[in-house]
Image (tube, rainbow, N blue to C red; front, side, top):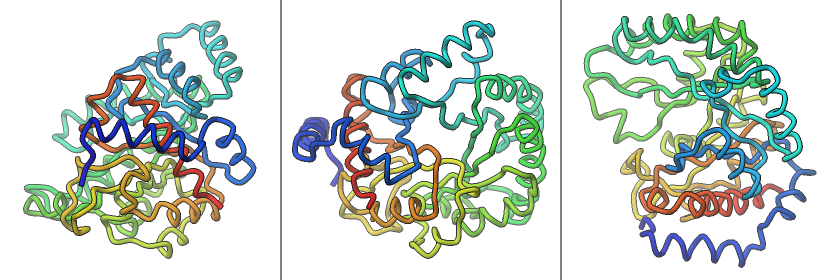
Length: 316
C-alpha cells in the first residue's frame, strides 16, 4: 500500500534515526562505489532553480545535482567560473541534464526543437556537463512498431549527432509497465533489449541507456540483464521502489515509491550489480509519489536523501 502524507513523514524520519544514515555513512561508502548520489528536484516534485538545487544538494548530503542548461547559458565566463569553484568547494558535480527536444510528436515540433539544441548543448559543454537523457514512449495510437522504430531512429540520430559534437553522452530510458505499453493500439519499446536495438540502429558514439529500477522491475528483467551491460553503456540511473499489493503487470507508471519504502523491488541486486560492473554515474530518485509532492520542499529533499542513503547502504 502506498504511504499517505503522515505515514510518509514518519517513515522518512524513522529511517533516518534507525539507520544512522547521515553524511558520515555516505562518505564511508565512497571507498566501495563510484556512482554518485544525485539530486533531481523536478523528479521529486520540488520547484527549485539551479542555485536553490545546489544549496539543497549540499545541505542534505548529495554528491551531484541536475544541470539547468538555460541558467548555465545565461552565465558569463566569470560567473560560470565562480559557480564551478563553489560546486567544487561543496563537493558537488553536475549530473545528467534533460534533453529538451520533443521528438515524440509531429515533424514541425521536432524540427523547431532541434534548431535550439546546439545552443543548449554548448551551454552544458561549457559548464563541464557530459551526460544528458530522455525517455521513450512505449506505445503509439497510429504508428506500428516498425514505423515508430524508423521515426525514432531518424530523429534520435539527428539529436545524437549534435550532442556527440558537444561531448555529451545521450541516455535513452525505456518505460516498462504493461499498463502503459498496452494502453494504445501499437506497443513500442519497453525493455532493455529493445532499447539496445534502437541504440544500435542510431549508431552514434555516446548513445546509451538510462536505467531505472522501476522499469527494470516492470519489464520483468533480472540481474542477468544488468550483467550484459558495461559502465560505458549506462548514462544515468533512476532508483525507485514500487507500491505493495500489486502484481508486476498491474503497476501504474505514475504511482511509484521512494527507494526502500516497500522492498517490492530488489534494490540490493540492482545496485550491487551496477557497482560490480563499475558504474560511475549519477543515481537519482524519481518516485512520482503524491505524498512526497505534498511535502514542503526541504522535507521532500530530506526524505529523498534519507531513502537514497538507505539504498546506498545496501552496496556491499
